[in-house]
Length: 135
Image (cartoon, rainbow, N blue to C red; front, side, top):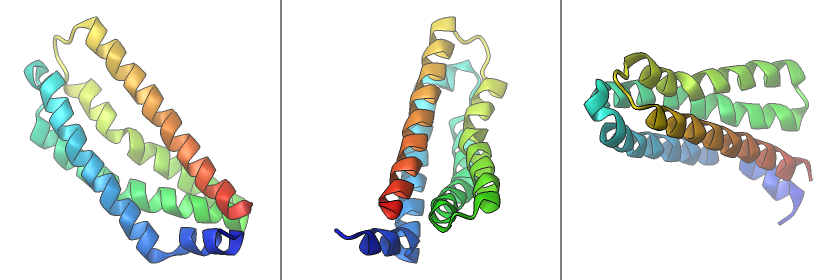
């Protein structure tokens, strides 16, 4: 695949919409997982789902924009969209930390490790998408 094709694919509105659908589907899956692990510790899975869905839409939009900003070398916009991407990425996790009560330390540690892993995956995915367009 040529770099022109990669570049146009990353800029395509259909790609952005597909990314949005995948992010929303992932939010639904996470709500089920949160209910399983934190449901007995005062975390409302429906509340979490609402928070996750509400933050997933701006997360998907800002992360897609950040990739395009990188390709365009629009550094000021990249910094802004990256900061907003990170903010919306962590909002559902902050919800869990705020509302979880009487949670075993091992569950908190496991949750924190999961956050670190998914943060790394998100960062590497954005970096990979941007470098594909750059190549």
